[in-house]
Length: 266
Image 1 (tube, rainbow, N blue to C red):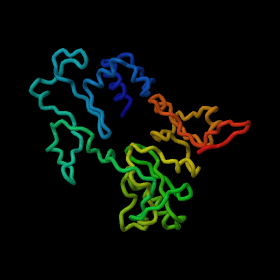
Image 2 (image 1 turned 120 degrees about the vertical axis):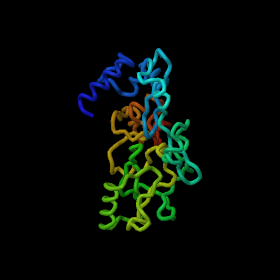
Image 3 (image 1 turned 90 degrees about the vertical axis):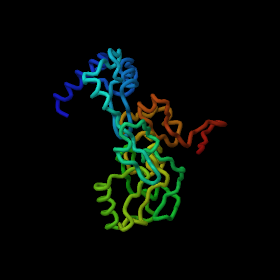
């Protein structure tokens, strides 16, 4: 939005919690704002696909105040619904409008059996760092997903993959290319991925791509403790926000001292 839109937004924010500073909006700081968190829990619906705000409707509410709309008009407002699956298809919007819904049927949240194999046109093979050819970033969670191929890509296949990466909105768990593409049966991604899946070890071990947080895919605040880097053969970083949420670096090959010399494990 424009600068005027941002000014208007912050004017509204001050009415919710005047302790929130415009230059301090990282999640770790916002979680400390009591009034804001009360407002979020009371009036907001936060989903992967949307964020909605609706007053409770009570007169003189201490958190959101009295609605400005006439009561009969306010009563017609509904919270935005989530996708709802019925059999193999999602219900039309008009059928779920006004209903209480959840993220239970969110496509990218669908549970799938975790596998370390990669599927190419129905054929499974063990993914290795040597089979990584490229990465696609999920358009929903933003995490990089390794694209594997048993053989080095031919020039036309590499060009087709580059075009697909530019034109195709990849989502975790979705096929990379249509069945009639020259990439069908040539490249694949690990089976069973969802947006909750961590960034694969192959992303780091192939040493072709920049470091990211293995939990959320962020490229920011990835400082690895020096002592940990010296003690472990491999350290996959975690961003400051995920670390504040209880996550730690993913390590392998931790060195232990025994009888005067170091021995590697992992």
